[in-house]
Length: 198
Image (cartoon, rainbow, N blue to C red; front, side):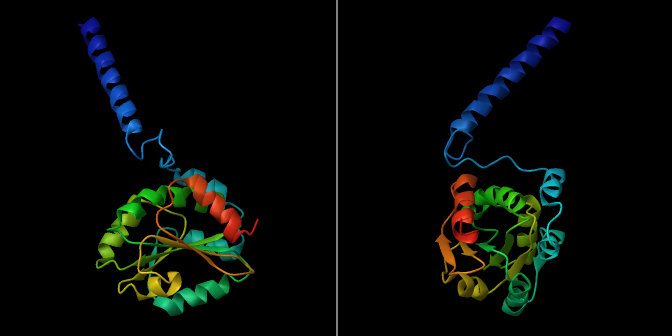
């Protein structure tokens, strides 16, 4: 009976290994160039963000929150972040490319979060509950502003498209990236080039 259990266990492991290899070969799997990075644990995110300056720490304290207030609240937040590079990602819970890139934003916002302010705009979501469920499934270390009408997102990104990301350096002009980030490496490079002006 013990030998039979061992054979069953080995067979199950072999099947799981084959499934994992098959998934890795799919577009977006771990072997493709568009792989989603492994999600960071909350403890790892806290460790990466420890020691953030107060304006950035206040963002981390609201990580995953969906804030009200529209353009006025966002402008006030941006004024409080003056002197820091800012990355604003426009997303929606119904947007498949947004879901695909959120792992990259989770990692980049944790790795750069002591130097760069990250913010989200949930633009054009008809349901606040859907947006909150999305944020719970894809936790990030920064808040998003709820934009039911889509007007705030269009105003900030100059686009009706989703997703769109705006990089705002402390000095200089914003850079707008339309579309999904294929991987965290591309997002990191754009943070360095357009937000940090490196």
